[in-house]
Length: 370
Image (cartoon, rainbow, N blue to C red):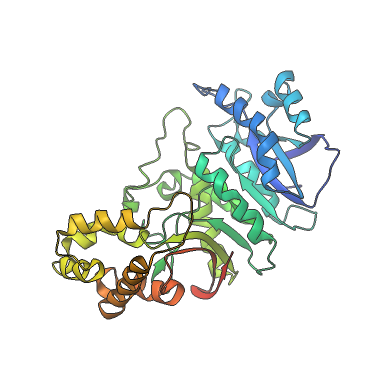
């Protein structure tokens, strides 16, 4: 992976070798993490996590401080991972890579500096949260369906717009890409990374932090504390403000993987619903009850709460589902015209669907269900 930014050297080769890769990164930051043990525990857990991606090779990008740690190196050997040492002199200070610059390393297999044919490069977290672990099988499953997408990612909230920077397809915003929940299936130009780093170094505020213009309740301003310009969120800033817009402009197909539950459009639009004076009328019809909007929302959410994913509905619940779609068809502005159109087109009469939404040129072109 020759490039203008970093030098790479494979310092351990696995016994098993697969074309598909699962990519994580492990480095020591300066100032150091307060709880470095959690990263060590995360690394050990990949003994089990890699089983989620059968037929894929675990690939770990490490800095010299991790590579020279005998305990950590033995753990990585036990994982039968390909271990790749990275060194990026321009982005080092006092022997360490600046801030959280290293988080970007796991993205490099997705770019045209990778001389090997790209099959699938899954990008994951070293120490994932439970939600990521339970949904990673979807990344693996959809990557094998020959969907023609250049990139796929797991989403959790397609129902609200996070920022004015966020592009839309047919009025529905592309959800924020989380750094450890996506896969590349086609290479992109490495110049995107080069240009991004130049913008950060130039002091461009849009790329140096999540600006106040984002107005996103899910994302606060990126704190530039001890890690300087390469603070928390630098990897996702690249994905969402550089990589995703390029994919869209280039006409690439993008796969949005989601688990749709009928309660989510209500849950994520509660503020809008409470402001609408007709919400009580709509809910009274949907639930066939005369009660407050607050009580109706609570009941609607509880009716379809199904942690075991049994999915079988009683006849009364099926009628509620039918009436919900009748309401958004007749009164699309209740949840928003674009969202209502999207729900009716994609999920009418369904209460639970695991699917990939394929988007190209800001248009929904296909929906694939598991």
